[in-house]
Amino acid sequence: MFASRTTQSGLFVFLLAGAMQSPAALAGHGRSPGRQFRADVDIESLKAEICFDRGAWSLSVCYEVEIEDLRGSPRFDLVLGLIEGGRPVLDRFGRPMVFVIPLSRPTEIDRCGEEVKFKDRFAARLPNGACVNPERLKVEARVVAATNGCVMDTDDCSVRFQRGGLRIAGAGFMDFRFHGRR
Picture 1 (cartoon, rainbow, N blue to C red):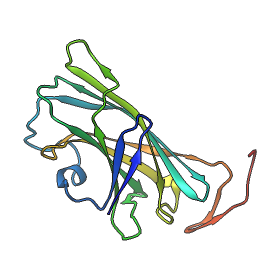
Picture 2 (picture 1 turned 135 degrees about the vertical axis):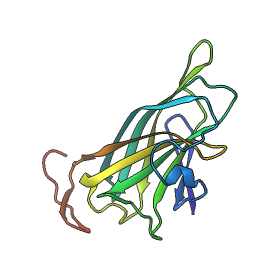
Picture 3 (picture 1 turned 45 degrees about the horizontal axis):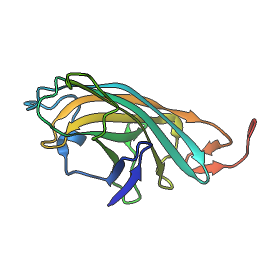
């Protein structure tokens, strides 16, 4: 099951529901043993927030990835997974939702070309019923070598919940009473 989204810089992002094409990207934590690239990859910044907007949950993730000592032209992907209460957020078919963002357009390149930064914002609407308690959401990020699936770096962050006009009344259903300013 594939779907695509567009980031602010115009990159296409693929939503792979239950994507197991890259097991190294999705399974296990930390760096994969025997990675073949000499690049030093670091997820420098990862921030996420979610709000209820026009009848659906809207997720927004800001990221900054730095790649140093890059030799050759290997491609990397940023793989984002959503975790709610210690379990993966599932799509309507019961498979974990994973967002794959190709790191193909750097925002900064140093003079020698040895340090490259990717900085962007990713936004997606989650399917109905995907998120029960947004206050328990967490984003797990991995930078993965696209050629062989080696995990180069990992990071995670809690998702900031924008309360807006929504109040969660109980597990599984929503009460649409507005509180505060609108």
